Length: 273
Image 1 (tube, rainbow, N blue to C red):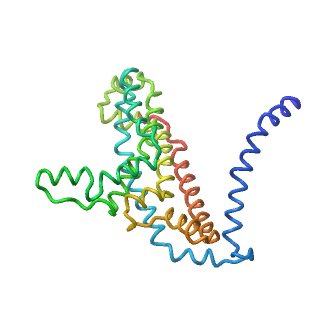
Image 2 (image 1 turned 60 degrees about the horizontal axis):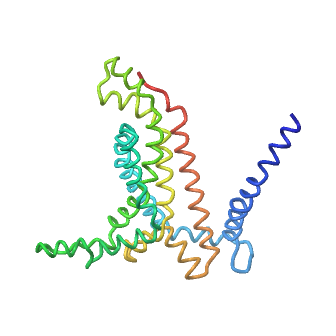
Image 3 (image 1 turned 90 degrees about the horizontal axis):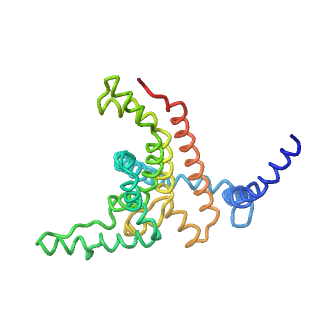
């Protein structure tokens, strides 16, 4: 037992080292800069300055929640349909979902900026049929659309993975007990797919609430989210202390959100008959 324990520890050492170097140390550095000034002296001024960014923080949460909810409404039926298809159809649908991800996020977002701008493809098409151009760049709708477009696959994949593992005999049993399509969805499919839904919400909400490039390009410089503020404080104003304080608060909020979501997924996998 001792040899086995020692062997397990040795095997896990690289992972512990990786976690310390790339997780623990960066978090400690962020915490250090958050509570110090430019001279390295302890201060709470960075934390107090967070009050000025309350509206920006709230906007980031609202935009991310809207994008996450819309992504879930699109992804859930799509994932269910894909999970009920044959193997060849599933491969084709999966390829279509993943195809945009083969390109960098920056390229995808910049491409949509060219499509949605005043002289973009959509407005040129509207002008060709005699309609007035639409103001799309610089609107909340464009930013939310960019979030949905870039992160929708991360909602589809975990839900599809869970649904594809649902035993069809359970659905047949529900039918034998008199369940219709709506009843099967509510009593069997929804409870069993909760872990995938929670994973998808986490994988979409977290990058949305911390994004900055999408809001910069599709927001046209008119919409500032927390990621934009942090990026400006660090790269433009060289204020690592305030930028770290903002990052620390955002990280704590994300951890709390993940903990709450995980609580919802615990014990919700039972089938209600």
